[in-house]
Structures are given as C-alpha cells and as structure tokens.
Image (cartoon, rainbow, N blue to C red; front, side):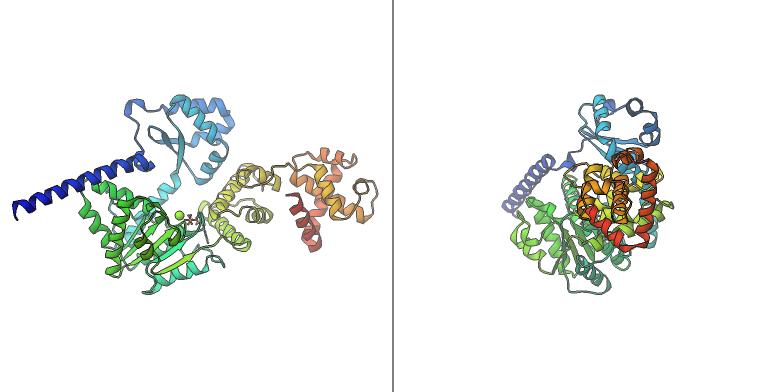
Length: 489
Ligand code: ADP
Ligand code: MG
C-alpha cells in the first residue's frame, strides 16, 4: 500500500470512530434505556425501612395481603424495579397503591421518579420455558450472558391462543402462510395501533418457524441497543455477521428507528443482505410504511415491497371471544376457579374498546377483586375498579336516576311506579328498578327500600330474587334490562 493510501485509510477510520462516538453520545442522551444508571452501592435504599413505612401507612390488613409480597429487585438512580409474585398482585397494587408507594419511596430517596414491576412467577416460568425451548430447538442460537441475547420469545403468545375474527383474519392467515411454505410475502409487514396483537403474532411466527429454521426475533429498540453496544465494544463485525446468519428475521416495532439515521443505515444493510440470501423478514409497526416519517424513502419502499397488512380494532364479538379465551387460560395457569359472572365479561367487552391489552388488564383487575372478595363484582363495583379505563362522564348513578330511567322506559309516571298499587304493569318495573338499584348503587337494601315509598328491605330482596329468576326464563325481561342499562351507563 502506498503511504498516501494508508494515510487516507487512517483518516477515514478516525472519522468513523468520531462519528460513532458522537452518535453514541447523542443516543445516550435521547434513549431512556441506555440512560438507566445503576445506583452506586453506598446510596442504596434500605428496603426493610421502606416496608415498615408501608405497613404504617397502609395498615396491617392491606400490608399483609398485598404489600408485604413485593420486593426491591433493582435500583437505579431515578427508578426502581419491584417484583410482585404474580400478575394479579402487580395489577392490584398498580391500580390502587402505586402512587402512594412512590411517594413513600421518594421520602427515602428523592431522586426516584418512577416504579417498574417485574413478575416473579413469569421469571420462573420464562426460565423453565427457555430451558425447555432450548432443549427442543437447537436451531435457535441463544447466547447466554452475551449482549446479543436476542431471541426473547414469549411462549405464551402462540398461534393456538390467537383468537381470529374479521379484523385480524388477513394478518393471521398471512402469518400462518409464511410458516407453512416458502411464501412470496417478503417482507411481511404488519401494522396496527397498540395492543392489537402484533407482538403476539410475531412471536407465534417465531415459535413456529424456529422448528425448522434459524430465527432471529428482536424488537427494533433492542436491535438499536445491541448496535450501540457493538460500536462501543468494537464488535461491529460480530454484530453484522450475527444478524445476517438467520433464515428468518423478525423485527418488532420498527417505528422505533425513525429519526435514527445511523441505525437506519445499519438496518438497511442487514435487510438487503437477508433478502439477497432469501431469508424471510417479518416486521411490525404502529403505522403503515408510507406513514413512517423521518425514515429514508429507500427504506420505506423496501419495507412495502412484500405484503403490507393492518390489524383493525376488534369488534364486540371478537373482544368477547378473546376475553373468554384469556379467562380460561388464566384459570388453567393458576389452577383456580374465579367467581365472575357472564354479565361482567360482557360488560368488559362492551366498555373497553381501546385495546386488547387494556381489556386483558381490566379482566385481571376484576379477577383480583373476585379473589379477594370471594364474589363476582357487580357492574357498579366493576366501574369503580376500572374507573381509569372507562370513559364515563363520571356521574354516579343514584336510585332516583334509576327510578326515572325505568319509568321512562316503561312509559309510566314515576309516582305511579312508586305507589302501593300491585298491578303487574306497575309492579314489574318497580321490581326492575329495585334490582338495578341494588346492582348499580352502593345504597344498602334498607336504604333502597326507603327510597321506594318506604318499603321494607325484604321487599327489595324479594324483587331482586324475582328479577333474577325472570332474567333466566323470560328473554323479554332480559332484553329490557339490557336496554335500560345502556341508558343508565
Ligand atoms: P401489540 O404488539 O399490537 O401492541 P400485543 O401483541 O402485545 O399487541 O397484544 C396485547 C395483548 O393482547 C397480549 O396479551 C395479546 O396476547 C393479546 N391479544 C391481542 N390480540 C389477540 C388475539 N387476537 N387473540 C388473543 N390475544 C390477543
Ligand atoms: Mg407490540
């Protein structure tokens, strides 16, 4: 090599190092994950002290039932990771006590800004699953203790428990198709808003294809993380080789690479190398390729070069099916029965429409309630448990409001309905109103009786029993009550 050439080469190398350093620094500043700085040893929180404070604040009952079971798993400068024994406990604590917990932790360490939870049971089953999975699938190269520990399949997201309906049928069919044969859908690009099942489907593809092929499954965020670490550790060659040896490359949440030029470049090269060797690529995103702003046009056009499919929000029927499927799954996993009425399942499916993830979160809360109270929540209680998820105009339903709504529904004068007359035309609506008052308000039975022209609480009990029976026997009554409920809620 001429001295001049080697000079140019060295200069280029220095430029490249400077570029990567600048890039790395800027990512450190913008990327939350890489920002996580572990707390220095001497500043560590004394968890036992905090537990004592929790007990003093929440009282013995709540502390013993819930709080005692959480542990400090890891501490960073500005957040802590706590572990809860089960998903139930986590959801219960998050929905009721999280703000207070954070306040107390802050008293001990001011810099803590947020709490994150991990679930012990899942960690154990993840480990077991992983071991089992490794044993069965030597095709998947899990590199333990390495930065490139990428294949994080969640074995509970498979094709078997993906419920199919009109809104996700195309995505499901395409996903199955690329597993069963060498399809021409390359890349397969699936997009939807959050919580619609993209990661679930991608996992299912990964699990299925890893039976015969070498699969890489990674979120764009982790890809980026490994990319930066490889630059830092001078391991770029290994990084490149590593991702290019797969026959199937699955990348979740590609929207993450928006605005990250260096990463886009790397992704583009990986993408091209894989397509050249006929590897299958599967991508998910929160929006269509054409709507991915701040991504180079040539990448967008490559992304849409195969099959692009969206998952639409599920309709009521599909939401109901998914809920029932999840409910059965949870019962099996925990080997327990839960007292949750069909009416409540229907209520969740009707009310929580924003995402399947939220709907499942709501189901978990309802199950936690039913476990603690050994009964199914009423609609009223359900609304209270889920008040942050359901967008009601937060008007609490009163007995008077129920009486008015029922009277209007049956075209009656309210005074007539509340009168002592016993004709069925008046008595049935009166009983329905009592029934609804019991289910949708917190008023005691004697109190409800008083509001129905000073009747005794036994009359209310009788009315509730009667309507319960009629709902089972007479579809007209059931329909009527559903109609009135819609007006109430
Ligand atoms: P996304 O990646 O689109 O944000 P996820 O795949 O994480 O959504 O799904 C959120 C939750 O909803 C997961 O628990 C997933 O199992 C569940 N889910 C979504 N769609 C379905 C479906 N069609 N059948 C069963 N579970 C589903
Ligand atoms: Mg996802």
